[in-house]
Structures are given as structure tokens and as C-alpha cells.
Image (cartoon, rainbow, N blue to C red; front, side, top):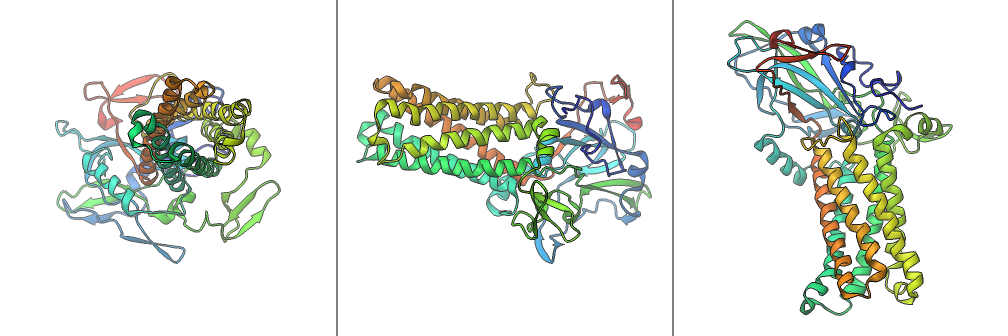
Length: 464
């Protein structure tokens, strides 16, 4: 049964086991009212904010907190994926749950940083926003130095990036001889283009299967991912709540455990293959049950987008196979249209649907773009890439005309680049597990409170 726009199913409500966080029910959103919510905001309760996760500790004024270099996890040492960030005083922190972030094992924190002009004392010390230049540079370096092969989200991004590179190479083989005939070498378009198309389609198919695995392994209970700790400053003798990434072994997403995806301890349930931990709890699902599909996943926007991608990649693979040398040159034009060009049109159309759904999933409303969200750009570029691949197939039956042949090949070229851009951004996203965003308002220094009826009220930052 689909969920309403303002409600979660009791068994699917995020962070339902985290008593320290309070769901702002008026700030639960879904792009479509007949599908599951995709956005929710949680705030620390007054008691949780004042007490923190542990007893008060003392720290000298200005002392920087050092994050542990390694964490013990299942007798294995693993580097902490998120480095210590520069910190700032803040008036408010809140947790932003997004369905996409939950699938990717990300923990989004929203912070209203302290205004030095405001004499009100800050309540929190929080990391600075991750969109700062230094943080972005570190994220790019992380792409070159961190390889969490056990993380399904990382594998999805990496494999789609690899597949996109292969498709870009394919596009050069097919389009460049038309643009610059002097650059052509023997069998470039037919053999080089056919082989790389088959490899690229196969890689996309593998990535799409992993995408479905990622979709059915969302954390059903949610994961806060952040720790609030009370710190007593020695010089000022005042207590302040410090917000920092929680120890990785406390993360409840499967992405944090390198043993899960590799499948240590599989057992078969009544309707699904699952991986279980030592306590017998489910930690990784290979196939969801029919009941789970009916009651949840068929109403989950991210799953529908992933499923559309898998259907499109599977149909598109037919075109990759029939385009191989030894097959393509033994088919009549009518057969070529039916088993080569039509699968490209249909498969590409599903790519368009998938990219569009992934884009809409990041939006509060289906018609309002969200360009400040990283996932929005990923879906948008994949949407453009799907248009390119579909256009290539649509023009294919008329490629006897040299102008149409050129435009068909060119559509593959820019469509491949669009997929590559989206995949690289997704690669960056998969490694940024602790994004921090800044809360901004236009109330002239006032904070916004939203009560249970959905009405907005302005209040001073101290009272927020």
C-alpha cells in the first residue's frame, strides 16, 4: 500500500529506534503523494542536545579534535573515510534524511552556523559545510586514494564510470571517421565500434544489477551517523555540544562492513537470499521477498528508477550483442532494424525514465529542481545520456543518408560523455559519507520553526 506524503509506515520510519532525534512531521516530503516519502528532517531533542552521547569531557579552548586514523571492525583495520573537518560554532543542527542518501550510506547534516553579530551564545560546535573548496579538493583526492570494494554504492559508481569511458571510446570509433575521414584506420567503425559497444553494454548491465542490489539494501531503520558529545571548555567554563561523525562500527548501513557484500554467512529465507551476522540479524539482501516488493519497493522512487535502469540495460545489451562483427554483417536491413536499432530505442527510453526518476527523487516537489543536491546532477546527466542513446537508435534505420548517419553517431558521442559526467559525480558522492549543508533563511537573522500543523513561525536563534 503506498504511503501518504506526510507519513512513514511504522516499520519503515527512519531513525525510529533513535530516541535522541525527533521527526519534524510537517517536514516529511515526497515528490509524488502516492509514493513513499523521500525527505525528512530530524532534530535533536533538548535532552539529547544537552547530554550528548557520553559524559562531559574537558577540552582546552581552541583545541582541535583529532579523528581516529583507524577503527577496529571485525578484527580488521580500516581507514576512517572522512577526515577531520574544520569546525565552527553553530546555533542549530538537524539531520536531513533522504532516500537516496540512505541507499548510498550517507549521513546528511544541516547546520545553521553562528552569526558573530548575534550575541546569543552558540549551542553546538559542528563541521563546516562540505561544499567548501578545501573539502571538495579532498573529495577529489579521496577518489584516487580510497577503494572500498565492499561498498555496493562505490562499485555501482565505479563500474558505470568504466562503462561510460568504454562508450566514449566507442563513440570516437564511430563518429570521428565521419568528422575527419583522414583519421580512420582499417575496420575502425565496424570492428572497433562493434566490440566496444558490446563491452560497454555488458558493463552497464553489471552496474545495473548492482544498482538493484543497492536499492533493496537500504537501511530500513535509518542511521544517524553523527555523535553529539558534551564538552566543557576549560577557559570559559561553559559546556557546548560537539557534533562529529560517529565511530564507523556504530554505522548501521551495510556499506560500513567490508564483510557483508562478500557474503560471509549466507542463508536462504522463505523468499530471499540474505546475508546474516553472528547474531542472526539480516545485513544484506540478495533478493527481496514478494511481500516487500508489494508493500514497499514498488512504491519507492529509487527502486523504480533502478529497476528502469536494469530493464533498459538488459534490452540495450541485445543491441550490443547483435552489433558484434560476424553477426551484424550477416543480417538484412529489416532484421537489423528489429534486433539492433529497436533495442537501442527501447533501452535508451528506459535510460531516460531512470534518469528522470533519479532526478525527481532528490526534489521536494516533482516540478521544482534541486541543483544544490549532488544526486540531482547525477540523475540529470543520466537523463541527458539516455536521450543521446535513444536518439542514436531512432535515427539508425535511416543511416543510409550520410547526414542522418552523422547525427546518429554524434548522439552516441555526446550521450556517452553525459553518462560519464554523471558517473564521475556519483563516484565522488559514493565516497562522501558525511555531507554537511548550511541552513539558510531569509528572515533577517530569525530562525524558522515549523509546528506540527505545518505553519511557519519566526523565533530568535536562541529559541530555535
